[in-house]
Length: 168
Image 1 (cartoon, helix red, strand yellow):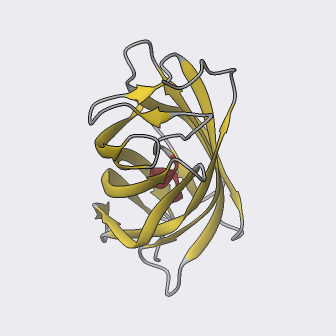
Image 2: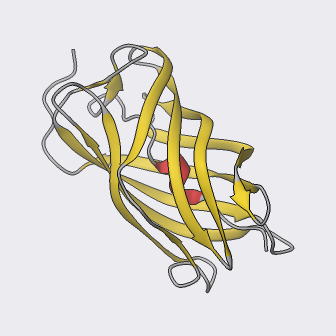
Image 3: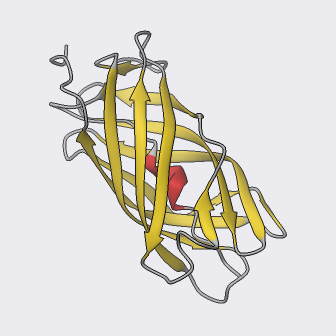
């Protein structure tokens, strides 16, 4: 069953008037909370992609480090939220590279249960569009899984949960 690894892409950076990548190592503004929401498509053992509505929480600490601290999957597909769901939160989000105020590339650790298997590992190359405040998991991004490799793609929208400090 090909599983939807939506959770992974959610963790990416946040944008202008929101979060931004200050450097290849941190987010700005520090000490803020962001909601990542949208639809992600997961493939693993099912014959076609499974769309799940994803809601994740990204916390930025005082040093600018990002962590996904919680979240849920909901239908889209009827198995989302019951047989396909995120687990073991405290998923690190790493800024790999960035063009300040424009875009960033993220690596996001994820851990998702998916219809009799799992998708656990680093989702690499997630695209954060700072201007439009979106996180894009490019069409077919791979992550380790059992019993098979997981494929994920989709788009998440980034919105503030707490009032962030102004961007530098």
